[in-house]
Image 1 (tube, helix red, strand yellow):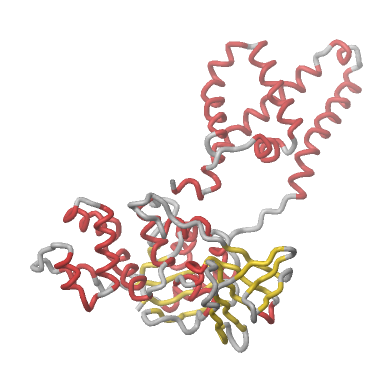
Image 2: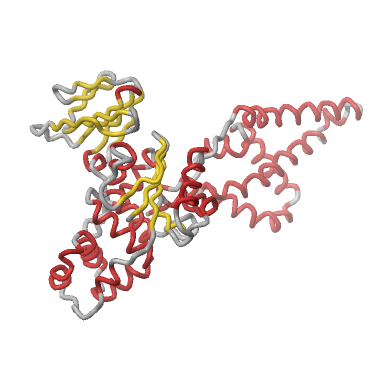
Amino acid sequence: AAGQSISELQPASWSLLAKGVAGHGALLVLSILGLGLLVRRHYRIISMLLFPILLALLSFVAQRFLIYLIPLYALGLAYLLRWLSGLKPLSKIPMRPRQLIMALLCLVLLGLNAKRAVKTTINPRITPEDVHLALTIREKTSPDTVIWTWWDSGYFMQFYTGRRAIIHGGNQNSDLIFITAFPLTVRDPVLARNWMKFFAARGLSGLYRVNSRFNDMEKTVDFLKQALARPDHLDAVIARFGLEKKTPWREYLFPGTRVCLYLPYRLIKDVYWWFYYGTWDLKEKRGVHPAAAVLPGEFSVDSRNGTVTIGPRTVPISELYYVTLTPELHTNGHKSYTRRSSRMGAIWIKEKNLAYLLDTRLVNSLFTRLVLLNPLSPPKGFKALRYIPLEGGVWKVE
């Protein structure tokens, strides 16, 4: 399910509840104790708290519901303090000293939260470089251009560029996630280019319309892959799938939509999921979770024998790309180790003491070719508009 790749849809663990809501597990326990005392002493209040409690319990289903737990946490903690202030030992203390004791106790409890708040830094996911790339799209493309990017950049792109994103947080579903990720995973730039232009123009309805001819989604996707990969053999593909030639398939499958591809560097960190969705096999009901690791410094490459060593572990590779940042990022060497059956490849930026150890299916994908290998000399059908090394880039889909 697509929700597996979205952190806010994952169930909250006890440690996340404790740190995210209360700052410390002990405070959350005290708050729950306070809520229990409140319900016990004023049982009728449960009729008003039942719905908020049910919403808060949804935190164990998805983290996005944690927000409903915070008011209950505050209510429980506040009632516990009120209950403590009414205990007999404290009631014998004069008013002013008792108020001071309770104030100090409140400060201690709040201090634990404040300490975590001060120490915790949450950096924005969007960087200044992302903004520069978005502004490039706005400056160098027409308003009717469709932006092809991963769903978590959709809203950001729409806001800064004024263009429509193929996918965003409000329209994502399993079919659209597959459609969006698929061209990033393929090694055929013709298929990737035509796939993007077709779905940028036709949207999900295009998939469903073609499927109405087959009533078989597996066959529909297979037809689209073959037809869009071989426009010069379209008639043969149509005949092979038993479709009517009278239908204006060429005009429908190859629209002149303007498309711009935006690929941020951070997608490398998310590759486990988007590559999985993009390689989804409808027949086998599974995709590929590619092995991928970024190696900053602590590694060595044996280019003669075709191995990468990380600490005590040595990984055989089937291919090695040499990449340089001078005068601009490009591949300036490649070695294949044909006798190796390894499914791993490496990309080595020697001057940065940086390497990428990747599944060969990922190495040969359009994403890697554009972002890590030759962003400024992309394959035919793609034109670089701007590239920021190790930050990302934008390409016009021609």
